[in-house]
View (cartoon, rainbow, N blue to C red):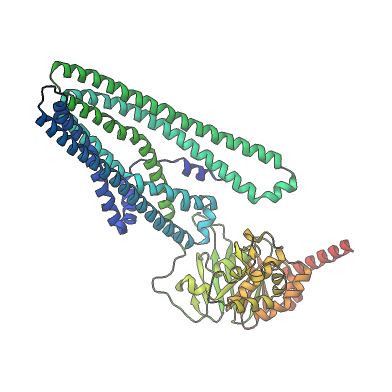
Length: 614
């Protein structure tokens, strides 16, 4: 895993970043009804909570005092019981409204959070899907998965229990303090003097918790990275017998994560009791002072009891602020990382006024120069002035040593990258003047490493395109000789494919890829080392299928096996990014150049291999 990946996970950022909040607001704008509804319920719950101690005060100073007075008349007692009933009803009604409002508040804001998360996740995924290959070259898959999953979930906390909930806590704090000063400014001063102490404890905890949380996040990223790598590379682990070493390494990483979690739990275990102790000490001083005032006749019991109820109401949001601070801090860091991905400029974008020609399959490269890193003062050119033309319906083969630029030509033709110099034309139109969808709709690409999705064989052939019928899929499979082994599967075409097609042989995966290419009926067929993983017997089976598949289509074939491209109309021999030879198989052999040497070398190796087997 790259250092930048770790750096991204370590950054927690600020708990409030106006720039990021401004970018998050549009995701809540479609759901203003939920925002206003949740805010209304939040204010209603806060108002009910603030009023209930006043009802308790009035009930104590009113009917309770009368009922406790031995000199009260029968009429006064009956009136007091009636008043007490109304106070009890009002108290219970406020509590019921508060409970209902808390439910409405939490429910609506959770819905808001989930809707905003859904929109943000869909937009992030769609943005990633539209990026060129260069984007995926620079961003590990694990990082992108984290952005779309856990980072988006962290941002959901901003909507569900973030700034709006903090605003509710602020209302409780301000309201409670105001009413406490109105009830008894002397007792209120005692509480106010305790607030800086609790604020200092919260600030101290925030710093420790931030460090522990960052460490825990980094350790978890290390565990996930190692787990992902070892599961994908299990064959290498088994072949070289490194299971025990891998288990030891995983145990060490898991232990580090456990220790980081312990530190986080320890901080919380220390903070809350200490803050509780500070709050309890403050309440003790309030009780002592209040009791003294009651006996001195300067404070009535009802007012003191109401003040007593306001004290925990004031301290609770202060205690919770440290937790919410960490939630918001994590959410802001997640937003920073997600918007960094979203701000990635697509350097292979569709034109503003695209052209949509009818593609017949004519291809032309005109003096094409390309490098994967154009930022260097002296670029390492992968292709240098490459020019060639492929008439519609003909076949072109690309051969050359590893690194000569064969696959790069395919990537440029499909417009996975854009050239730095020169141009690529399809039917006389520069491919940069077409939309990527229009261009690629005319192509089918078969790679050396075939990727199969988890699902049925049928869906893997038509890739979810319902316009391709089952009959068309079966016909394509019969043409490439995949039908026989597919019907032998449990479930046949509806049989389930394991992740990445793990239960299929390399040859079977290639046959499905050929069927996939044929089912989409392309004008241009591109084969990038597509037969390198197929054994000789399977290769013979599909040779006639390939000939039929190429009939009436333009074909561009990259192959190391020169025996598979001897019938190509034109062969390009590449060396260090340049076209050094081109012509038919017979013409190139007659020149006795680089192609001849490659052919003779493979022929000699083939004879040696056969002799070894014999």
